[in-house]
Image (tube, rainbow, N blue to C red; front, side, top):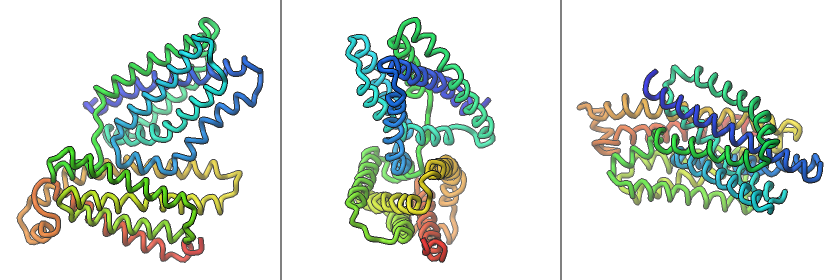
Length: 376
């Protein structure tokens, strides 16, 4: 095994133990809640409060994950989940635990899972060799099914011996193990935006400023969309917003050469994203029967998130082995491109942004001009 795959195996084992601990806690909480009043509704509400924030936040979580450190997102998500378990443990020891505490915790965990899941998927895609993808898929299926089989048995046994607190302690122990593996062992390469800015500015502060502004852009776009005053054709909102993001985000990101321009371009790239997701959701809710929405949204999320690791792996390969070396050559084409984006480290990645912006904006326009899309 090469080093990257060994790194993944360690990560996979640690996450499997952590997932086992979390699943045991979830099952033990079901047992505890049902013992309180023998009501199926109280158990059902556990899942309700877990899925509601996940469904709501998943619409925009993918965009947030794209532009932020996957490792940090995973560490923060896991830490908050662990704090929730600690909160339940303390209340249980003090005999102060109530059902509404568990509903609150499930709501918080559901919110964090909307970010943790995509971040984990992207991270896996970035650290494993392409030829190992099928093997990794098999390992993930094996571990998820193993957890599904073992967690109810172990949780029920431990619950019988030590009540709820024993299961929670084991959950926290598995978290600590997985946390330190993720923090000190797993190294996740980021998207080409970060290395491009670092290469061209040689400044961590510049990268931090640009990422912050991009986050602000997403917030502003979200606030505008949330007003509910956008009387715009949904298909038009999707494709024209995407075209705007490509034109004034990616293309100008390639041409910019300082933190001020990159920040303005990051704002232009991220602000339209909530409009795209809102337009997509409006169309889906309008045309998909209510009884089929769960399946369609699941498929949509699976397709969307599955493209992220592919794009990131391809982006890293093209940056390191195609565009960066190409921009060091001496010929007329390179000279003309250097007049646009400049010379030196990061110029090849700037060309990638330029090509993405041009092709993305053209593709968005072509898609919008399709009659079957305009009919929506």
